[in-house]
Amino acid sequence: MCSKSPVPGPLETFVRLRRGVIARTVSIALTTRLDGAHPAAASRVFDAFTRGVDAWLTRPEKVLLTGATVHPHADHGLSVETWEAKFPKMPPNAFAMLVRMAGASVPGARRLEIREHADVRTLVVRDLGLDPEATILDVPWQLAFVRATLPAVRIVFAERISADTVARVAQVLQAWADVLALGGFPGAGGRGASSGAVSAVDAAAERELVLRFTQIACGYDAWEALFEALLPVDEEASIELVEIGGGDACTT
Image (cartoon, rainbow, N blue to C red; front, side):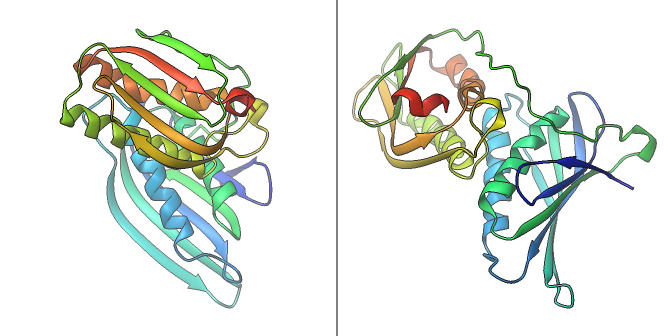
């Protein structure tokens, strides 16, 4: 029987994973109430989570979805959506982001089960607790947090960027912004869900790309994830500066 890890709100989370930064095949089952549920919400969260994983893992391997099913249980007023997927090398706590997103952005979510396909004796990770320590990666570019009327992320490159680079960075930024908007990066101490609404991606300048928001609220782990996603970009097109604008909303 799986152990239960408490998470904010009504969502219960059951976890069985192996330790270590390893590749793993995982079954993920999300149970939601049939009344008032949004049919596309669970799929949207799972898709944003896997695109986020793909965006900030530096390895060429990507998440491979091998199966997806939906089973309604009308007699109990519940529906269970299950995904089978192969994940590239990643630590167990990477799945905590999915837990937060499901709890924040899937109406009627009741239970999330994350179970790895492996010898049951090796499935010893049963808790995806948040790390209370806020850290910033040692990155090769300058980093600035500035106050601004509207929040934005500005990336300045050392040289003029190609259309391919613009497309790649825009894809990384959009994947990160989707996870942010669906509650994947909580505020300080794990309090509250993250949120964000992208208003534009501006690549008008030759060496700059700007992601603009109408509003944003998140913790420092959001910037950690963004920087991890930008590290492989920097290897191909050197980044001089990443500027985070938006004042206190960036670290709630």
